[in-house]
Length: 143
Ligand code: CO
Image (cartoon, rainbow, N blue to C red; front, side, top):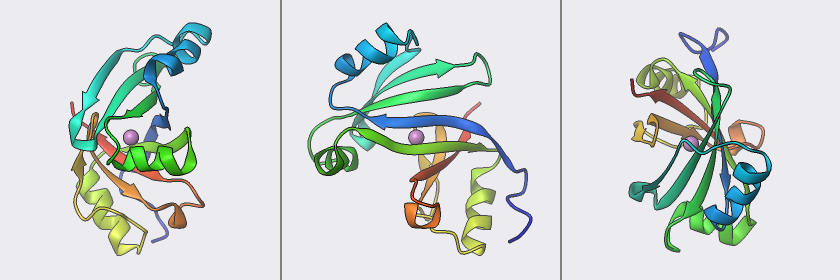
């Protein structure tokens, strides 16, 4: 594929950071930097608690702080193995089903065979081996 995804990539949707404890992390992101969380919610299907820190107003991006719930989730294993830090970058696309199809046709290292429900809409992940070392998520936001 040389022309890219139909509809292109719209924007950086969020940057996700794994933290050991949300309240502790918020002391820096909220209290020192001054980014007010728009919401904090449990997302049980991924065994994670998320604080959303919006930047740049409508159409801006977010920092998401991810705290694992329990010790069995992917995020918990990430924290055990690698410690706190950058987990993934997420880009917004118009149509996630079409993007997935086009990525599969292009032979991209897509980790999902169908879009999964996420906190923001529906998304897929691409393996870091195909993205120069960054776990990359693509999502279509729910309206
Ligand atoms: Co994400």
